[in-house]
Length: 354
Image (cartoon, rainbow, N blue to C red; front, side):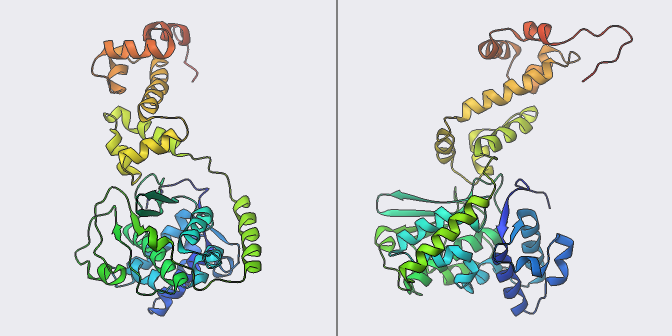
């Protein structure tokens, strides 16, 4: 299974302990598969255990293959208790309202899974919760996307003591399965599939619901301090969205390049959301296209076996004159002038050193 994220990303071991317990209750013991994934039950059971994303996804895939349950992600989320959310669930339970609980989930979501981002957005009467699928180089497997979404709904129901609560809407990026009856039964509404992004929609009234399982405030303070220490121990997000977009553009330029719609789809976002996220780091999609083209242009120009026309084609320009104008804008030189300054002449019979 190809990796979608950097190896430095990780998942809370508590989540996988809950997964193992759920699968075992269904008659499937996955503990013999752990060593092949570089995991151990003892290691997962540590309160601060972190598991590489690739290993975690491998265990999810194994569970999905072994269980005769096409809606495995939904059913797993349905059985979660607060311990399944690690310290984040218990922190949510110390909040005053559902909205405050979700804000805490957003703040500390990296403790659960630090590859995708969990975010809240307010639009008029709507509160949109994006459950950990944003910022990934490609959309997560269906079971994981449905688990993330269903577990967010389950958490709202748990902390509000409203097991009958239903969101205003649920939207999934992935295509609809053959049977959506289990989705409608769980969420209380029929989800939309093949949406621009995976999200749960609440109303402002929903966000104002009081938390009914609130723990003592002193416990909340201790939990917050503990969560902050755990968060500080996680590696910094050095694999920023701009860098992921840039790598995608560089890899596809020789194949004709990518439109903003295609790149946004890879990250399970709308083009508008992608532009907004890039703007947060003072970037733009067109600027990153230029950056990708310039980096490749200099690499190709350093290889004097490629003609300027071939370089232009590999960079996705319609004709060499457009490439010529763009390169002059970037470097103040024509491609030929830059090549002359940066390509060493190799004496006959000598070998080029890269």
